[in-house]
Length: 395
Image (tube, rainbow, N blue to C red; front, side, top):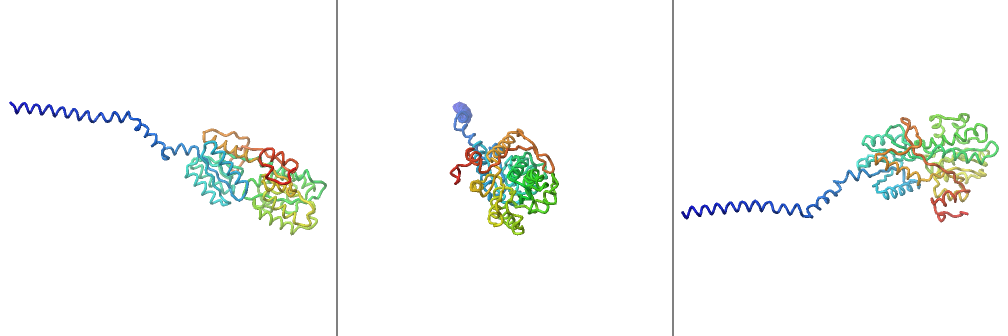
């Protein structure tokens, strides 16, 4: 009897232990669910870079500029970086240093890093097509900046100044200051690989050609231009023939050497009071120095563009005649606004288009202003683009 009772008691105790064990397994779980630390741990894991990469990529812009050797592009780099970071977007800026192969590698690098929009100034507009195609294939939008990428349908927008107006204003300045007939005219152009060089020249030719045809100007350094003097509209091949003789390749030394070579073969009668179409400020200063050093040159008028600080000082000092001011602040803002619109799935507002040989690329165009000694204070100092302290000789 005793053994049977003891056996019953053992069974009861075993049952109680099983119940307690079951309860013991569930009670620790409840505090864990209610505890704040466990809930706070999850967001910490989600904030890790790998988890938020898709969101970060959506706000990342890549920028490719042609060279660090020209002040213009270094200034653009600073403006892009400051403005995009202030707007809350991640930005990476790469330079191609005049190398189309490096340019394509830069595009591929930005694609790998997950950018969704590339603002792209090509070194060679045609060679850049392959890089633009690679971007399109990767789902990356391309904004061609200041120079048009040619021969591809991979360009979404073109942010530019009115490039035809640039050349036209340069030429008009020469026309406005010319008197009589037989005025010696020396023509210079940008790089034959740059579509902008063609557009600038086209704008200039539209103004100069009638006065070349009527004898007001006589071209002294391009047999191709002389042969085409009676033709108001040139084909691209005809433009290329002229530019091939007068290209500076946007390079200071090339411009100086070409100007000196032109002056060496020119007679004294081909000099005197000369008129010079120079494509931009860097080449204008180089060409101006060459003409100023020639004793047979009585005076010269020379054009430019970009309102580089050194050229503004040249204008103040009377060593460069004018520049076409392209307010890069406006152009940078236009490019940034277009990039942000594309990131947000919107279409930037275009104000025209440029044909790149394959498609008409929607264009966002900024105005340009002629600047000489008469309005340098108003256009460049009063506007806040430069400080008066940057220059000497300002009145």
